[in-house]
Image 1 (cartoon, one colour):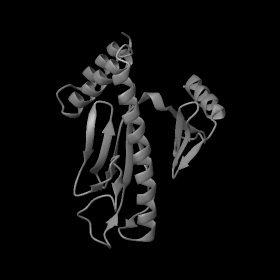
Image 2 (cartoon, rainbow, N blue to C red; image 1 turned 45 degrees about the vertical axis):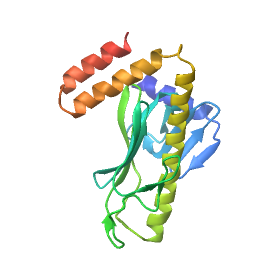
Image 3 (spheres, one colour; image 1 turned 90 degrees about the vertical axis):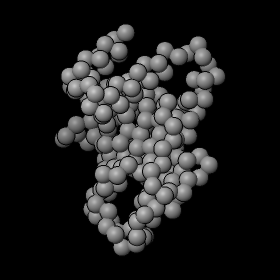
Image 4 (cartoon, rainbow, N blue to C red; image 1 turned 120 degrees about the vertical axis):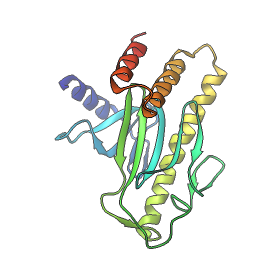
Length: 203
């Protein structure tokens, strides 16, 4: 664990921040990002740093309901009556069926990295009222984070299509996504998933 913490600190120190989108801080030159409130472990103040190239998929979950998602080899999925822009950005609120005045207790961003699934970022720390200025500001931030991840993964997909000789990492990613889907569908157990994932990453 100490080695992981040191490695994370080194990545954090090496970052050249080029963009900040709400809770998300990005180093586009080195392909790194972190969230302000997601740390390497309890008791540590250094945010957990991730490599953009390892991003597999993500979804936004509001009060346990998936709102929008995207990822490598996953078609864009927008749940509910959401109006989407040409790049898939969520517009006008998180879910279409909501009414003003309703309280939302939880909004999470859940993202999967190669070999590191279900990283969760809680985007609110208290109930928030739909239609309030606070909610509108939050939706704008989440829209921008969603758009950044979506565009990045789209570009990554397009690059892999244009460069068919560089498919090994994409193939591994595809297999990891399939394994996670089997786990989520309870077709395989956690133990089987862990073993298959280890075997796949060690190929």
